[in-house]
Amino acid sequence: MRIEITSTSYELTDGMREHIEKRLLKLKRYFDSVMDCHVFLRVERFIYKFEITLHGNGFDLFSEAHSEDIHAAFDSAAEKMERQIRKLKDKIRRRRSRRGGRPSAEPAGAQEPAEEFEG
Image (cartoon, rainbow, N blue to C red; front, top):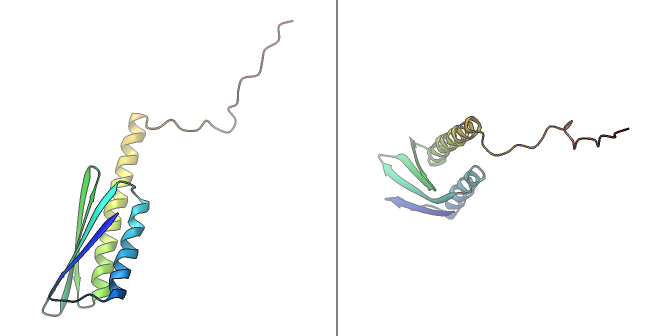
């Protein structure tokens, strides 16, 4: 996954960049098809506003949050994104199960039929 971080009127520290990348890489566990992630930070009157856009194969998600604390603003936006991606995955899972989805494993009690003896 490619993560692009952009900020205007504020210089992000290396520690904050690492925090952003680490948190967003965790979202990859929900979908392997997540291609790009763009994080945009804007500071207006001592309020940090984060916008996160996630592009995947067949979906685009967007979240935003603002706070007076930079960490709280990003964490809130990341939590919103995680809820959206979880909701999307559940929706896809339900749709697959309605259509029959992938063949599931046989129940534990179902084994090959025993040979019949004539006699």
